[in-house]
Image (cartoon, rainbow, N blue to C red; front, side, top):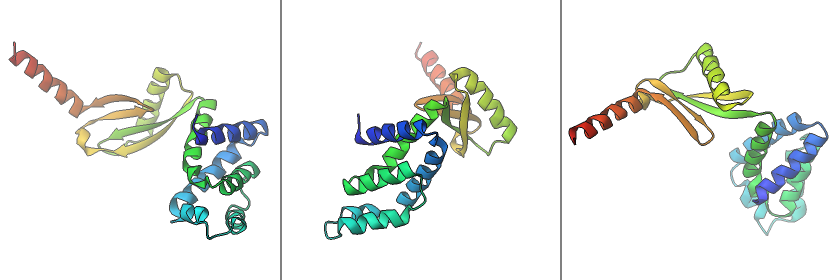
Length: 179
């Protein structure tokens, strides 16, 4: 098990036990956003010329008001020079959170932005197909599909695009031509 997964599991267990799952998830989302937007934060935190106390003070000041368990984890990561795995911890934690609530992140690719009713219909269809209680749908524009849509859930792809249908027709012509 990866180190990020170990931290995520430990954090998930403790915040779930203390009924702070949603608060921790929201705060960890924010922490991850900050870490991804602040240039050189990891270099600062591993720089041997900067004292450990200065690094800890920076983290304390920067993330003051964050969920206590998330906050403590950030301090531990800083102290152990492992802060660079915060984004991976966030990913693992989100996976555990989604699993806990039987939900999944879904990307629906289409040629144009789909309306809410269309997305709701797709959600209902794929909830029935997958058994998830809730789907967190993100609609992405992909003009190369020509028409139709493609749904990505985890590692599964459900392709109902015109481009796939055209490829299938092309392959059928190739096989009949060789007969």
